Length: 86
Image (tube, rainbow, N blue to C red; front, top):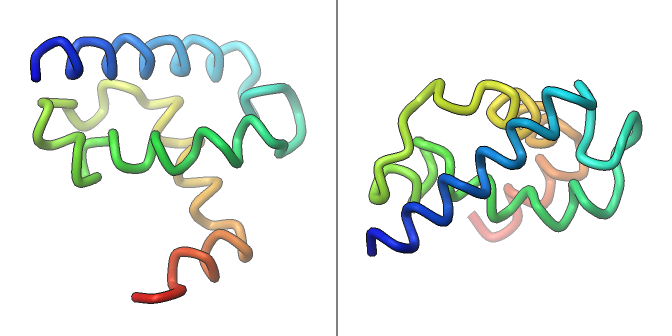
């Protein structure tokens, strides 16, 4: 469990640094496949996600990642997809 938690936090840190550079999306100024593929994993790894609280990810530890995830989560197609089946 600790090894997975440490690796998850390391990867969140990589994303944090990348998003600090781009200020928008993972691959630059526009929403793309990198964001689409990464979002579900990040969503469960953040503190309010089902995995984040279990591995000890603290709220506010990754502000750029959290802002990016919130921006993605507010996209109309993502809202519709997340509502599907709930």
